[in-house]
Length: 155
Image (cartoon, rainbow, N blue to C red; front, side):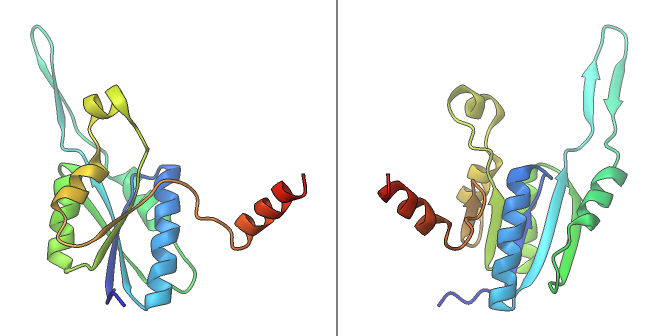
């Protein structure tokens, strides 16, 4: 059995991240592992106009409140709000915390959208110091597969 003592779950507060968070929480509960939740804020963006440069400063208060709102009954969660490039920062936190597993949602982008926007999950997968589990869809409800199979067989 894989010794899982520390699980890092990355969130961008999307529905896919919420599913990954719940999955990571279930694993942390089952393994008695420490759960670290991290959200990465992009650094300030500079926008150039003809005569001026505007720098858009991120407001960390919204993400901080959203991060602290992520709760799971009976599970102690450590929260980290970081600034930087998401994939590199997630991997950095994984190194610092000696995590055994990274769990993250994926938006499932393909084709041109993935080429233009990149894939944080893919970058983390390539550079992480530990296994990475990506969660693409909702976690199935126990018995749901059997119920669908029985319904399909009765048709």
